[in-house]
Image (cartoon, rainbow, N blue to C red; front, side):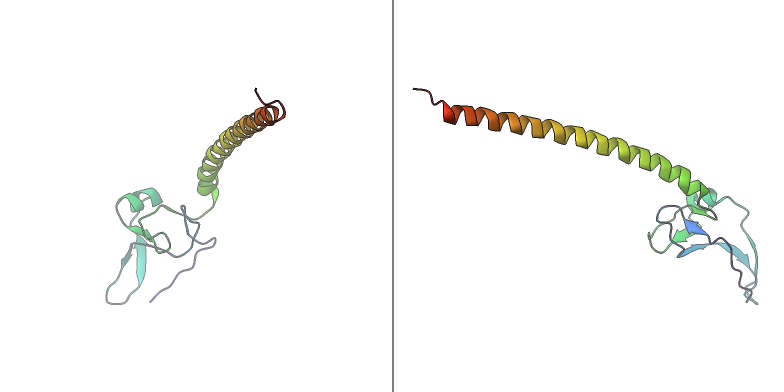
Length: 113
């Protein structure tokens, strides 16, 4: 059986793991791998011909982190926007709580008759 190693390794674009598989053309009598299916990584995933054991699903594979970098960059931007929104919401809630505490302190210092 002819084994081949790739450098850089082929990665799952979802989890960045290397525990991945894809379909190849193989001589069944010798086990020799003679070629791939001639499809892009995206095509292999959509056809159910690539697999990540870590994700337990058909995922898009890549030989470099370039694809993942752009995908992760978009995800990072979305996460940063959401974190910023949550920080704004927390700040608003903290101000409301501080105002409520201040009102309560005023009431306790100046009770109504």
